[in-house]
Image (cartoon, rainbow over all chains, first blue to last red; front, side):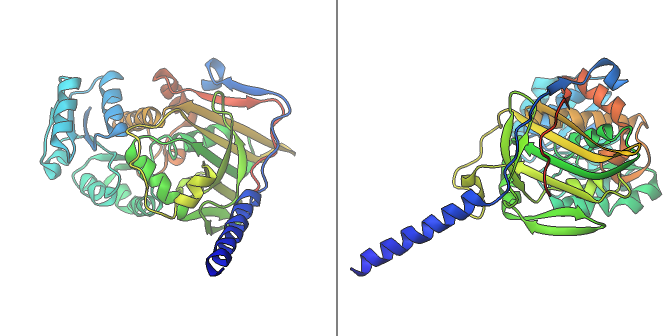
Length: 45
Length: 333
């Protein structure tokens, strides 16, 4: 019984840590248009 | 030009090769604690590369000393400028960068250059920030992000950085925050694209603040997985790879252009060790040719004219890119 309680506690703590890691940070919004262009010629003069 | 390259790992070997292939060089001394590796490099590069294991003597042999060791740059840089050589350091450890920047007075007094953090990140990121800021009347914010590592030493440094204290510049002061915090989705040039990035002990802010008087915020982040963030607090569980895969950097500059708010995003994609080697070699050549802005110890954002430097990198195959069109919601800081 004691071992079971410890296992449940460990799982609970693990879940809380995973949730905190999952939720922290604000994420981002993908670009809505445009793209990357290599700098060349006039950009580098 | 006579050069000494100290450290022949993934970055040092690339820097040495770039020095040999990108202009005249009279003498190239290669130094590494692993004598067999240094001998193999000398055999591979051929004349004028040579091996010497007498480190204090070697530093006197060059007009420029390129330091690519994982640590101990300050003492070697001091010795090199005392002997009349310019120094290019690829270090990306915050404490080492701070120690090297403290050599500014000594380097100025001797009329020598100490280029601090001349790699992919920091290094190319500083030049990209300067180039992105062209046309801005005032730069308010700079946000740097990077993905990937060069050799094993670089991988170890990234591991430490994720568990260290991130040093950001905010409203005229330094702000320390825990590494591995502040997740942001950052969009790098193709084919790397979108990756979650987190605060880490990266020296970008230390190097960029001097180059941008009046800047309010400078931050730096590195890409990582959740597993990286958890295991960053443990010893490395597996030995790092001999060389990392494709990496990228991204620099977002925000400020005022005329009366309008503006932002510009530049980036680059390459193998980090290859790009770092090219940046270090080009910085060494500029130092030897007297093309750096002033004597003293500083980052490339202060010392290098950005357009010419990026053109030089492009000639060496390390190409920058600009994001055009609608930009994403930026890094929140």
